[in-house]
Image (cartoon, rainbow, N blue to C red; front, side):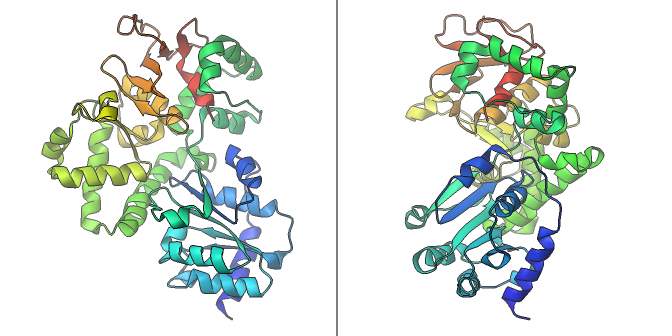
Length: 400
């Protein structure tokens, strides 16, 4: 049995597996794309494989014209992607779905050759830690980032209802009416209870498989991102991975602005140069969020970055008693960073799109810090409906 036969057998077996009916927003965007090579990247556990299989099953093409492979399967170890796709193409293959492409050696070179020489379409997925740096290559394909579940998607999954994506401008200008519509659509369910559940376990679709084991599964996902993705992509020695874990734990238990590079260096024993490199790795792997001070836009002032874990589920998994303020800010940052630029300022928690100022806090938060600041707003936790420039924090979970 040659490799293509093995691949078709594995593919046939994959097609017998159940996949969720719920389709994330990127499904519809990718479905419309005419690109010859499409890449889907994102953190571990966000649903890249499910999305690829949903796209594949929606094609309504003959079996022999499509194929799905995963490069982390032993059968594909050391295999030339170009040679494999060339044979697939010669046997009538038209579209290939390639999972975990970062496990394949020199995949960029092979995909470039596929684009230039083969009449086959490729949809691939890879770790968010991937660095696609060749400009000649990046012109040839369309990349789509699959983020964590938004609060909106979590509610759709939980309640089986359809909810509208809202722009930041819509939320700022019309948050009361939007919040009322959402609350009405929830019927007997309470938005603040759903929001609380989301903060604990709602960012990754795999929570549906076993909520009781969610933290264990998330811990496994973190380890896989560190020991497999980062270790392989950046050739990090296994002994150094424990240092990355220590860095994650340090960020988890600290205030977002409590840690300067110097402080972390002293706490962890990592040199500053190595620390900057490691923070970049963790950021690329979607494990942390780094937010610069607005002054850094002009390189005029040296200020520490604000450091957050990438979402509240990670925070709850790595810290036994995370601070309420950190949870709130982490949620806000995790929802806004997908489609918006984020900085922090000396006046407020966040500067969004270099235009809007946001302070994040509980129901007693007031405008004292930003009362004379134009385009300033409060993102308030523990309220269902806002008033004027006081916007419910949960509503920022409807941006995608």
